[in-house]
Length: 605
Image (cartoon, rainbow, N blue to C red):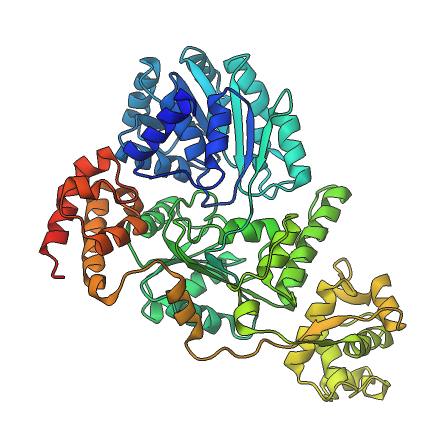
């Protein structure tokens, strides 16, 4: 082991309180310490930030971290400061005194890490200051933002390559992201590096996350039931519209849940206050649009629920990745319906992006629909999208609750026949009415009760036909023309099935799980505490919340859930014993150790 890597191991324990690297971290840290330019694609929660924070402490000089969101900078600086690291950020939300303090430390070369947004980095005064600050490494977080193929493209990221060269001709560059397919990775390399960097693509698997999808029935009730199953946990509920964000927050509040809304239309002071409560307190549920996105650095989010279908697989993966960043068990649920599919397709077709970009976005949406209607393990389907083989996970709804498949060729043919015989001009509900033989006003108005397909599907319920339509849409047998009122039409692939040239399998509705099984399995999977330690854990959380609120920092900046769980189960009685607990570094031991030890000593057991 090199001397620099040995120093990194020592700092990992003394500063951050970790006994060892997570999988994939060590060789990335070694590459950075060796002076190589690096592109690291690592899933959320795998410890990307440590891959540039540790080298920043091992080596002399300044590391500049480019981040797209002020909230993310603020939280990382708080966490580093709590661990005894001299770090700061320069951004528009700081008061003038804070920006002056950080600028002074920068000029005096006392900072180890400086967080900036790309817009500020481009300012001439900022560049001049950095040119005099011994910058050794520029770490670009959320690097997929540089790519027009990425799901969060930001044009200001396009300048970062040239800005890095202005700061220092041989400035070492590190780009990090949680989600980047091959086209996006290629774009990152072309736009940020003069030569191909050392590239690390880590497993996309997050085995602690339980994956589940459910068709929408009564979405507000479904969300409420899901949240109630996680009483006392922190979680996020994502919605497609601002109105739904506020409506769901009110619904949850009326049911006694501490829920708060977050979207770009709210006053900034309200948004910031709601985010601070979510970060500092336990058991808070945030209903939000994706405006509540990349800046979430809270490690103990125990669930993420999508009340509406996400935009694509990459967005889905990024958003569920905000749960369980501490490695403990976390739950996800995505609700979806035909209206979601129509909305997402319409957004693609009505966008002003080039045709090639639209083609890629259609493929990404279709991959998400295939995941929603998957007939096999969801994790296998998700990881296969990222080119990663896997075995059935045992931790998704399909693995746990079971799914039965059947030859769906005849049902698909009936559905497509209804589409063709009505001139490919109608929506799903009207087509289902024809299939089940329902004499609705529109069926009679268009004389569709006289069609050969009228009533041919009366052996199935409406809800079953909705599932069939969703599945054959996900399979690409039928599609919607968004330029003509969303009419359904049969694709070339569908015509092959209709002619009997190809057979397909569909899945039946999920078998109902045994009552309480989800909660029991989730509890069994969690690295939690026994009944004898539950009271102590609750007391430790109260102390953590009080300290976080006093210091106006997120609760995890004090200690993470994992640290509190280990404190409750191991019950250290001395500072030396507490030092061996995960997440307890030297600075935190000195600052918080005695207060937590007093609570432990006072607890029976």
